[in-house]
Image (cartoon, rainbow, N blue to C red):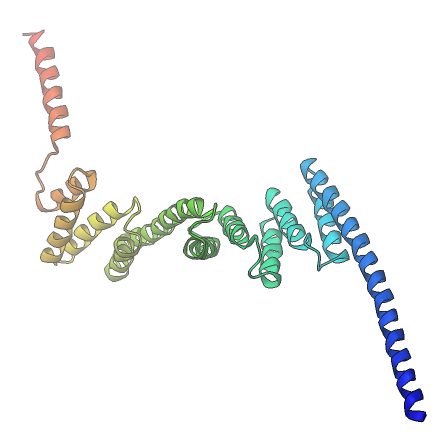
Length: 280
């Protein structure tokens, strides 16, 4: 009899717990629906404020929406929109902070490729003087490289590739700037190292031709003529019509006059002769 009563009691307790559990679930579900709607409303307010140019109020709404319901499907979007709002007004540091926060919370999220792109762009846009501060350039390169390698088919990979070419030109220009400084100070070895970096690492930039020519010059000056000729041949083979090749040719042929300058010289002589003939 006691066992029978115990079984009945256990069944009643179980039913009570299930019943309570169902009620709690319903309450939570109702609360979640309410939070979802609140979040959607705040998101819309943020979008409206962003369109009207009130960036700080937009960010405030996006961040409040995320805080209300961080598990919602809207949450990742609110972080990205906060970051974009900051980016649109050149608050690049704040934008990067929000985007890195997104990567920490949603490393495999739906918008990850865009996030990497916008971080790279934020660093890129914050470049002020590549000769003084190289960190923004290197950081933007890091994120664009990652995007290009890991998301080659994304909508942002093409622009990332274009930005990487611009970045490489910036880095090459910095190397050449430093190399020229060393050449001016007659510090040949560090100058050579910088020039070689350009032709080995940044071989698709516009600074390669000048870098090769400077190597021709510096090796000739320090008496390594064979090494100088080697780079002159390299320049001639790849950039025969380049003005830098003509400059390198002059290193070995001091009396060389380029065809263009020869034409100008002949034309000038003809004008002088005609002018003189008027007074003969």
